[in-house]
Image 1: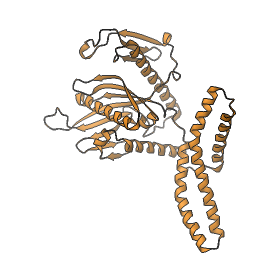
Image 2: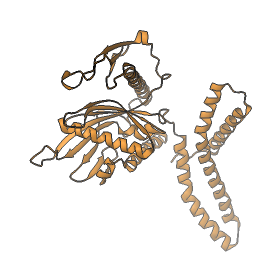
Image 3: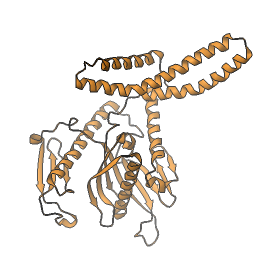
Image 4: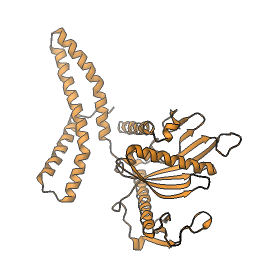
Length: 359
């Protein structure tokens, strides 16, 4: 465990006081005030954690001195008990402070774009993609988040070949970002007369949603926008107006098609939202590779080709392969009770990042 020095704790408190004084002047321009307020809000929990470490260390110092200097047996016994208690609590407080000081992912508080695609397994993979979407929708409901379908390609047997949804709420990306990867299911399909267990898969991608200020797009120069009539399975027209939108980002070749809405303007707005998010994620990934070099986090790589989790129906278990965690709570997890699973992934990521700081 990294020990935070008293000097570092003093610096944290001093910076909080400096920001507080700046806001109190009433002389900051509005954009500067917003930036200072944001930094203050982010620093406040760090100061709280630092003050707790400072308080416990001060108490330990006083009690240690008392144990050494006081000759009364009763006083010494009390001091020993309290010292033992403080030595138990102090490492937890120091770890809490170290976690608070870890560099934060700037996207953690953002909404997220959730993309689920059926993989190997045909109709069963599409059904599983539908199960995953419902799992995340129920988890979002439990968190008080809002889910909006952006686009969906239903399978004829049920489920989805592909579905994209926007998830909005506090800390969405922070909670869902470790869901990216290949999810595998082992179960007997409803269409299987022989009762044999099949293995199918679906790919999940969770991207932090971009805002207009994050990605600069010159619509006149950077985009080619095509408008055409929406079509469904087999090529049949699903409405009688030219409302489907295809947007090509010319510099990268990235293409987004949106046809779920009957309104051309709504389809264009949704397509631009998806396009910005994918461009923003591409830039985040480029910067991540530059900073990380060869190091690849076991939990947080976000590699969509990596098999991350298996849902085994015959045994009622879910196994996350990145952290070797198996929970025999498959029905509950599919109902959106994912806190234990997501919490374990976040804890493992925090432990990895702390270990990397310690060298």
